[in-house]
Length: 208
Ligand code: URA
Image 1 (tube, rainbow, N blue to C red):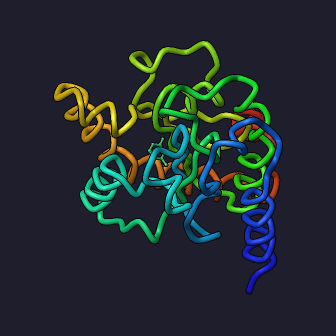
Image 2: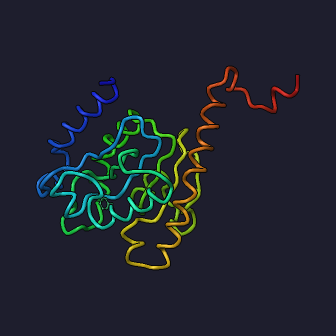
């Protein structure tokens, strides 16, 4: 087992026992997240729902099935991607997570991002989008890739919203099909950054 895998397992154990906010009092099971440590794509949803809370796994309900279909449309299976949420415990009655709950859970997401180091992070829904793009509107930025703190982040509509609104469904499916290109672009960017002297901007090099 790699060091990252071992650390991720330890983190899972910590999250499953987490007492840091009131959601710990109402949850059945915490839902740390699932997927390989070397995943190129990391999805960040909002919070566990009814089925996720029962099973302790993310996106196992209807929204998760739709996510799997969209993954299949770009030639990927769930087991190839990492899937987690901004809050790891179910908000009662599926209400929106509170700012204090998101803040209490934030170090877990930070640690998962550091351990997995994905090429592209995909946020699903408003609350995970706000973690990377505070103050932005999803209607304005969905389906575009931006570099945030050195990572490529793409904001998408939440699959549950798209299941309820036909017009969003087509938009989400179209945005999803852009992900392979964003992965390729992130790979190119990573390779360029790894080249010796890459800290110098190219314009500067061409002066000599
Ligand atoms: N919706 C989410 O945002 N996350 C899940 O894990 C399930 C449904």
